[in-house]
Structures are given as C-alpha cells and as structure tokens.
Image 1: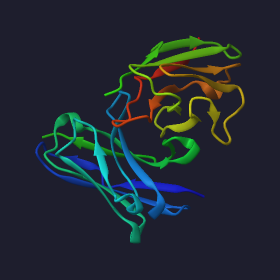
Image 2: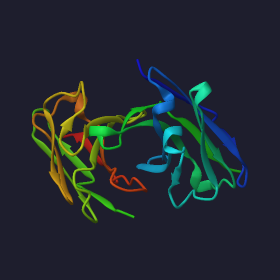
Image 3: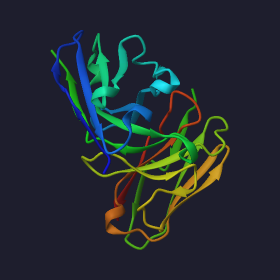
Length: 123
Length: 107
C-alpha cells in the first residue's frame, strides 16, 4: 500500500525558516518524481514545485511565488522528500501536501497524496 | 504560465442529478489534464487523468472528456458522497497550474 506522510509544519515568524518532510512507502521512491502542493485556508490548490528522480538528474522546478525562497530536495536512502522554506511570508500560510507524480500513460498526474501539514506564518 | 479556468465556481445539485463541470486552458494542453476531488478537511484524490481515463477504484459515474483547451468532468448521477470540491490541473508544462475549484453542494 502506498503511503506518503508529511511532517514538520508549525508556527513560524515572518522571515523565518522551516523544513517539511514527507516519508514515502509502498513504491520505489528513488524512481519517483515528487511534488509539493499547498492550500491556503479556505482557498484552492496551488502547485509549489517538483523534483525529478536521480535518474533524471533530480532537477527541480518551482512556482514563481516561492522561487528563490523554497528548495525541494530528496534523500532516497530514507525514502524522504523535503521542502526547505526560507524568508517565510504571511501568504505562505497553508496546508502543504506532498504527492507522487505518475509518468507514462498518467501524463504526470498526482496519484498519491499525503494528509498535509499546516504551516502558519505569523508574528 | 498556463491559466486554468473552471466553471462554475459553485454548483448546487440534488442526489441523482447529472452534473457537468468545465475547465478551460489558456493554451492547448493536448490531453494533459487531470481532475481531482477534495472533501472537506481531506487531501485531494485523483479521479481522472489524461483528460478521460478513470483512476482505478473511481466509480464509473464519473467521466472526463475534451482535448486542446476545453475539458469537462461529468457525474452521471450524483451520489451523497460526491458532494465535494473538484479541481482540474494541467500537467503539460510547469508550473502545473490548477483551476480555482468547483464546489458541489446539496440543493
């Protein structure tokens, strides 16, 4: 059974930093592309960024609002995805979801999602 | 960036109704279009990928169609468990943008 479980959320002051983790199981994590999606309170889904597999050079892409402040990385030995968030702003307050990116005939759909972890940026 | 526009934003319907949600992309995305369902307080789940392919385990009352810039999600007979918010998402190019969502509520 595929599982992805996020952790690391919490309350942080504006300008602060936080690192989110996402532990995966039930599939070959090292082969998977992974993504982060966030959802501000009462709002819709917003794509944050994606990391490809090591075989695809672990290249990353980011949404404009987070580019230069957020970094996605992975540790395949621990089946873990990370989201390093710096220079946090109030508008980064959201539930952050990690999800698996399915290639092939799935055309990069997000097929498994974690339950999310809440990040609150407030003084 | 590709903009995704869903309509309507809000839909009130009864059990048994046929419901259609539309999603329009600002440029052609061929069939790189996915639909997700999100129930209150829960993570989204994948309903349909590649515009029209039902994800495993999703009831056959859900269907998707379209290509290029115009897409639809149809629920042939709305069930109580279908009241939720639905999002389209393009996976053609980065950033992988979502539509703003369509909330389906009980009439």
